Image (cartoon, rainbow, N blue to C red):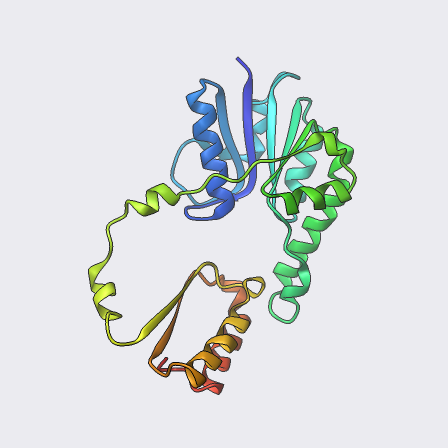
Length: 244
């Protein structure tokens, strides 16, 4: 039976790339493939995930398959992929332009730069197929060198059905169930998601159209983006939106 290794730099609960990795694992497992996830940074408890350092113990045949999830600069993973003698597939999730992070996080700038560098050289590794989250991603991938005949659109797996079945927290719902109009934003708080522009737009709406409105931002803030978080808080204070 062919073995399939799914590789990602980091895996955690709730992350979009991690959701795709886990969804892919579940589908392949149901098809009775011998499949395992390999990552460098592991933040989930399932024993289906192993250290990327152990992948050579799993992939042993040239007909085995590796699915490499490309979403950031991960040169350790790229070096390991280059050394493996097997069928190689890339799942491309998009690389955020580093410009968004200038002045906020050197780590994010370097990670995004590394991702673009990988995007430019990965076609040298004898990749059999490129799976892309969207048409936009596929067009970008083709522009970097891979043959169009090797590129396909495969939307990522997600947890929407599970989220739809979650029970609501009525304490939170009741807290915001008043006369105000609630505007809700859900997602990681990062510069490329446009939170500064969201606050600007809400400030105009609140001032000129509806004073009885409230902006609720729900999302994780990475510890390396403290400067960006402070920037957003300063913007809120400057626009007198602390109570909105």
